[in-house]
Length: 72
Image (cartoon, rainbow, N blue to C red; front, side):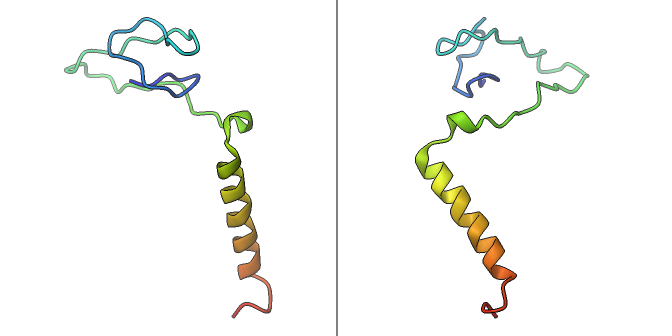
């Protein structure tokens, strides 16, 4: 299982995340008929590393350069 707040791995059956203290919702049993729907993922820019930021900016610049006239 993964923590929905910090994204770290949490052992099965844990009541809360050891890293951030967030409460962990219990998963339904394996044969449960209803589909499990956890909370939606939210991007937190403060958690991005400098490598993630450089990669994102480089990708954005590459996408923009594809539409410029000198590329082709």
